[in-house]
Image (cartoon, rainbow, N blue to C red):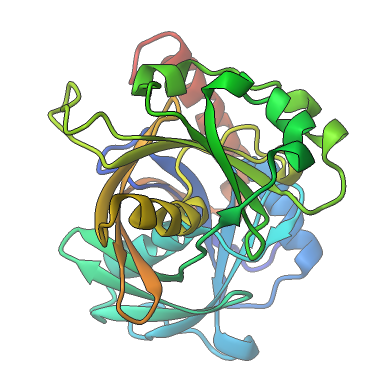
Amino acid sequence: MSSLKPSVPLYIVDAFTDRPFHGNPAAICLLKQSLSEDDMQKIAAEMNLSETAYIQGVDGGDCDFEHGDRFGLRWFTPTNEVPLCGHATMASAAVIFFVCDNPSPKVTFQTLSGDLVVQRQGRGITMNFPLNTPQLENFESVEKLLNLVIKKELIDSVHYSSDTKKLLVRLNDTCSRDDLESIRPDITNFQNVESSGRIRGVIVTVKGDNGKADKQQNTYDFLSRYFAPWNGIREDPVTGSAHTVLAGYWSGVLEKKTMHARQCSARGGDVTVHIRDDGRVDLTGEAAVVLRGFSDDLRVFCWLRIIKKYLWSEGIIE
């Protein structure tokens, strides 16, 4: 964008994975100068990722990315600002820790959801988030939406998190990972049957395969997928905020404080969740920095994303 002076450093980071082109991609912008909300939204729409994050000084103050330990952080989808985004928070911390070479053992992000503390764990990153344990939801109240998600007979129970506006749909224990990965919700019509604003995302989850390892020899306590067309996101590859709801739910079911989870999107990603004694939750994962540039190179970023998508669709890259 030629109107952005001086140039804004831009990064694309894949979160909840140690490999490029897996996990959940986020665009990260380092702001040393003020940027209007309109420009933030336009950049997010141009990047067209589930979230674009903006790291800036606290309360409009100066920002030292190389040495500071407290920053302001905002997240925008292609259509609107959101109050919480886990994967873009992890991606933001990865830029601070591993690109800016900030030696701080932890940083604090001031956000619309309060202060979020993020710590480095070797190459891993741990985020301290609010725990959003959902409550049992009446099936009939959301039946029209559920009919667009999956067959009624496959649903064990339905839960709702008012703080995150997320609906959690648990599949019954006869369902497997293959069943979860094979569902094809009628996402296009989600907004037609739910336009009240009460629900902004749908989590579909199933219990892990009873200790059975996958092809990479990983075992998981629970699995999930996440759909949020209300925020311009048909299916989110890996979702930190959804895991604040999933952690609260599955901890009660499994009677475990530490659990390993997999979000089973096409890209996929791994999250370790740990319920803290203070009633919050730690989310741990890794991140891979894929692209670096400046706002002047925004068109280049978008063309690189188009090329990457083509190579993936042709099976040239995984």
